[in-house]
Image 1 (cartoon, rainbow over the protein chains, first blue to last red):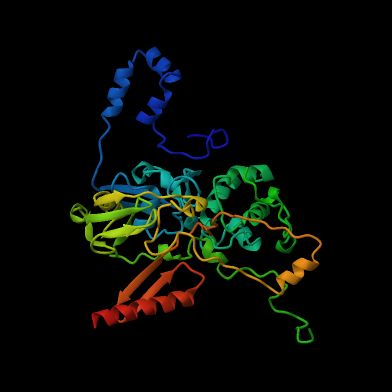
Image 2: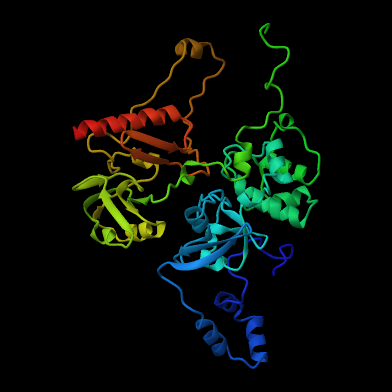
Length: 229
Length: 215
């Protein structure tokens, strides 16, 4: 599994197994060399990949493990994980805003890695642990981050909030004491149009155990407060 | 000031917002989260042309897409389109994908027309007219306060300026819209809006006019 700390991109677009896409990306670099060194031709590799079972175009049965619970759905292969969550499960916490990997409102965790669910096909998400905002609180107990969001008032309309919570939850899982730079980088893929950024950063700091200013004192917002990483 | 209570209950004290828990747990239901079972998805076919004469719209192929239950025109007959995105037709189906397929299956016979995108181009005398009976440049909205001539006469300096600003759009993340349930005589609207009373009154006006037309 990719170590998120060393991954060049925080966002995953394809499945973990070696896929046709991975192969084509690697052509011309080390993959061809290693294929050759294993005495396997490029043609043989492609032949193996092309023998994958073709699914669809109509709806096919899939199972997704979401917040620890296995759900059986029927989706067309082109249905995104976002659409499957919002349309075929009661889990509408994950929000659709841009549907084009520009805003982060659809952020979920796939095997603990923040992922734009609008850019992941539901059928590709099989076999992975999917976490949504609904899965954060356990037995009615909010996480420290969720409490901090309320304490620091890190939200207004709340539409970006699930996405930010997932990105920051992943950060704190890997890095319990992040610097402000690391916090900003972790949610640099999440947009907020209400302008709650200063309070979101404060909430993340509070969840990490850093004392922050009360809201009344964060009134003079500087460009630094709202810039993304 | 003498009426100001010595001890306030909420004002001046940290008060968690009442919808905080709902929003951080994903439990908060926005308009687009309301999806009663069995409801159809709707999508609107919008004009790709900023200015055009629509001669005809063919919905036959759209209606034949599996899962599509209805396809309707906004208006029958030939019509003018005046902006990119203007509503032309709508489809309803059992899935988002069916609706997307249906939109792609709509055939339009169209005469594209000239258009401009900058305001200063739009007020030129040879600019294509948006409306037949009105000039592109609307009436000026002049505001005066007090005695302007007198103030100018007394001013140390007078500057005349032409200031332009681009259109500003409030563009929140939440996709605006309304989810509406019509059951017998009861209309329920889940609206993403700050003007809930305007939505209520507007909905009543629409439903009254519908009733009037139906006799």
